[in-house]
Amino acid sequence: MIRTPVTADLLRGALEVEQTDRGVLPHRLPAWARAQLPDPSLLLAEGQPAGVRLAFRTAATVVELEALPGKRVYAGAPLRPDGTYELVIDGEVVGGGSIDSGDVLLVDLMTGRAERTDGEPGRVRWDGLPPGVKDVEIWLPHDETSRPISLHTDAPVEPAPPSGRRTWVHHGSSISHGSAAERPTGTWAAHASRLAGVDLVNLGFAGSALVDQCVARTIRDLPADLVSVKLGINVANHDVMRMRAFTSAVHGFLDTIRDGHPETPLVVVSPIWCGIHEDTPGPAAPDMGAWAAGEVRFVAVGDPDEVPAGKLTLRTIRAELARIVEQRADPHLRYLDGLTLYGAEDAVRLPLPDDLHPDATTHRLIGERFASAVLSGLVTTSPAGGSSAAARH
Image (cartoon, rainbow, N blue to C red; front, top):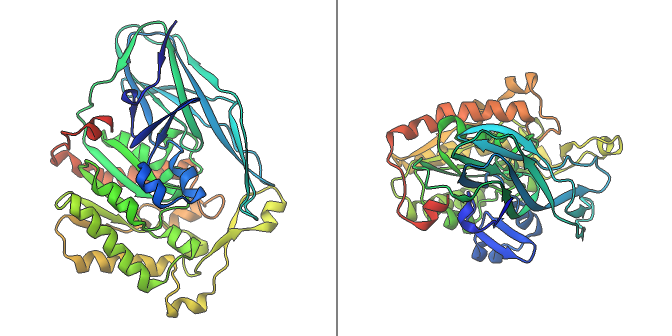
């Protein structure tokens, strides 16, 4: 077996790759942005490699990845399943596997305290692969940290050449990040990108789609053939601003993106259906009765009587996002109603298991609808390129 250390040139979908003494840590926000927003929740989310994959070319019939996972455990909640590593050969998913060892972060949602315990790396192995030279991807877990250390193969590997595909940069909340999806290629954004044959840069951050300027500047500086921003749910369920601030923040967010992408297709996506927040503002909180029964569910605890004073609900957010897009009269800017991706009728058939996040089946549904409604249009555009960042994505 040939050992190949994992280096930045083997990774796609990461904005930066940090070398540590325990493997490389892919980041989905640059260091300067992380320094501006040292929020533990955001730092945890951006360090989880949603959409990040190793990409290499090899004739190997055995591929083994050594990596150090970082797992999350919520006090009082059921244990989360181990993250999945997926093997993709010439575009087809051929297998998955997990590593049951690794670091563990114990989080108490009631107090906000977190305690880390260091663990050991492990390996995931695939054998019996078809002979001959092939393009291989290993998609890292979307919902736990992973520090790839090395590849072990029975033939040499080399970094995959640039794909030549168009680049889609997407920002959103935990739903875009992939919460409750079963596997990294099964998040709605990953599923949509694979259906459309585009390269995804996933800037979906669980709990942290809060119209932050450093995220807008990050998007501004990335090569992209399409940019989409899915805004609203975290603003409501964190109860971080009222309508006056939200309107200004969204305009500023779009202005900043336009500084770097004056004519790039830009799609503003409003929230999908979420019954607890349609007419009730945030914040959201754990449903303690459900947690006592071993279930993870959430409730909205804001006061609907405060909506006329500017408190945000999903219904008012959708209306304001649509108004902002219309007001800007930008020929390259489009509004997509999130209810067309998952609406009230869908919720009857496919309810949100925890009242906030879609399940695996719903992720696929949203991905299919987004690919059809938005990504199919990329076939008429020219690919972005020319920079080292573009090659890495």
